[in-house]
Image 1 (spheres, rainbow, N blue to C red):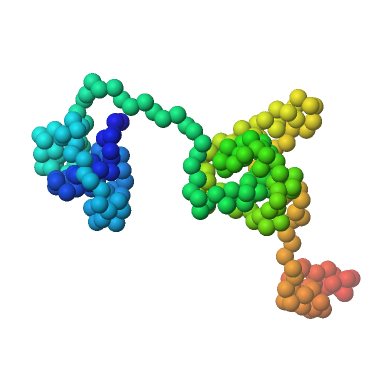
Image 2: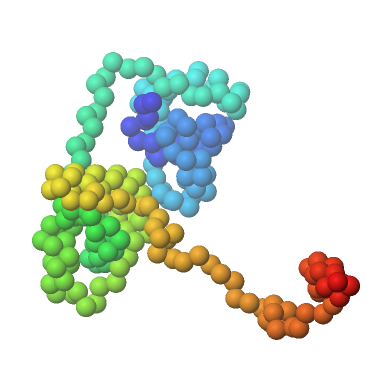
Amino acid sequence: MAYPLMPKATASWLVDNTTLTFDQIAEFCGLHPLEVQALADGEVNAGIMGANPVLNGELTAEEIARCEKTSNAKLKMVKTDLPKPRARAKGPRYTPVVKRAEKPNAVLYLLKRYPELADVQVAKLIGSTKPTVESIRNKTHPLMTSLKPTDPLSIGLCTGEELEKAVRRAQRRVQREAKAAGKPIPTFGEETAAEETPAFIPAPTPADAADTAKTPTLDDLDDLGMDDEDDARANG
């Protein structure tokens, strides 16, 4: 679905100049309703200059009026023959300055948690370099003694989907290499606790110990069915 060229500026204009709902504006601009509400309240992007979608050829006044009458109606963008902007090629990931110092800690976390990841994969996930990853793996990094493993997901250096895809690719590579070398194929994520951990046996309670040490009485023998045998020998 096509979105306005300036989504937030367009959303700001629609909030100030129409009676459209936040959901309608959010869907048209490709934003979250809470983000549109924050724009309306001035909590984010304060002072942003609205962009009129009618003048920009993205909406018509009739389309806005139609959707203002029905809150469930969806805005439809005007079809245009203008060429769409070319998608920007993926380049190096930008990392905020405050998070750049956490990169070595995130590298250390991945190397400990997923040792099957190749240095190139770790460098790509974190936005670091291969020599840095190699030095941390070989424990020759200048700050090695002060590094603390930090989950890169918690600080936004990569997404869970990217990490999961990289781990699966690394595991398949390790298995292929083991198969080609004639070695046992390693498995990942399988529980072996049943082989390593003995079955749980509850400790005896004081009551159980007392029952074990107690001398059996006639009533106990009667419960076990032993009194009939004793009576037979006595009468024999």
